[in-house]
Length: 149
Figure (cartoon, rainbow, N blue to C red):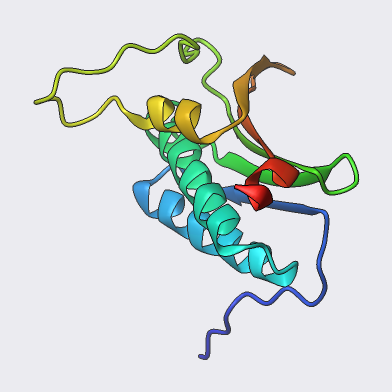
């Protein structure tokens, strides 16, 4: 049996992948998002920011949004004539909404920094409820702002 690698044949304005809620899936979502970003020649700084955001949102969906037997969805969408990139992580754990005002964890805490990273890197982020039984945590980047520094 041979296994090929994922290939994107032409730049698309959307990328979506449904994954099992595991930490491995968070890493895989970052790698696939990086491949998608290469199809439209994203600047390195933008690609690094996007893959970090994808990784943080996917890890949160896998860990905090996990429902046994239910996958989570990562979506990247170019909007507003390719000036905005929206990253979404959709899971089925609607009773666990992230706090939009985060407090920094204690220095010796091993976790709790993911959404602080998202807040720092994204131009905007938030949570959208529904449709039942879903919630979507999203982050947006203004690409014109990103490419000029």
